[in-house]
Amino acid sequence: MRVGMQVGTITTPRHRLTGEALARVAEQAEQAGFSTLAMADHFSLRPESTPFIPREENAPVVTEFFEAWSTLAFLAARTSRIKLTTLVSGITMRYPAVLIKTADTLDALSNGRAYLSLGASPDFGLDEHQRMGLSLPPAGERVARLEEVLLMAMQMWSGQDAPFTGTYYHLSSTVGTPFFVQQPHPPILIAGHGNKMLRLMACYADVVSIGFGRDFDAMRERLTYLREQCEQLQRPYEAIQKTTFFTLPIVRDGRLDPVALDMIRELAEMGFDEIMIRQVSDEATFDLLASEFVPLINGVSVGGR
Image (cartoon, rainbow, N blue to C red; front, side, top):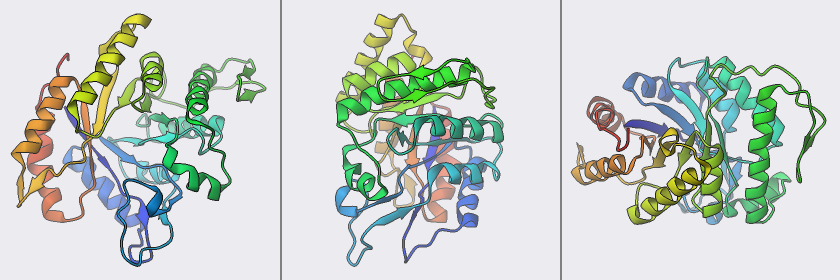
């Protein structure tokens, strides 16, 4: 099993991020053996509109984020092994052909360490979209658009000299030579949980992000449905890597929490190849994760592997 880290890129008047601080986090994560650096792909969010930003007294009206893909490119230059991804990029946030080209470029410049990480954009992003001048169609349409984006990526990566004509997106031609290093292309990471999303995962994903490391019954149901969809497509279920964002505390009172460790082992038995944890702020906790937690989890076998 592997351990990835989501790097915080929130910046506030009281907490101004610097490039050197971010680079130091990335370098330490790579040295500690973390598998992946991931970051949320948002521009700015109102705390009251989102489930994951704590509401603080006298907090700013909006919470600002560093732009994710340019931050990943910056961190690619300061690292050499760790994988780089958003978790994940909503397909309504950028014009899809530009997003595909961005991931292609990052894979080339990082020597094969980028994911094309996509989702159908969360409902809580309506305010963000409106303030950025972006359209947020209904959920069903967003899923349909996501499938078109995946088909667009495949055609752009093929270098085929042909137009791309979908219901929502149109390109006059996809001729050209992609830059990517990984073969047959940068891994496609899709995050989501509904049945429509799981069907897309079975068809297109190399990696799936499911759940938040809790409500195991629901996660098992989603994995079962994903397996059934793979069987219908005659695609090996084991070909898809599984990751989940583990949000529960891992360290308590200066020690690894045995309850959290048991839960992570259970996730491995379920077939999860990777857990993603949040960046920690204090050095003592990070040192404990680096010296004990990451080596321990790296030694955990994954069910079905």
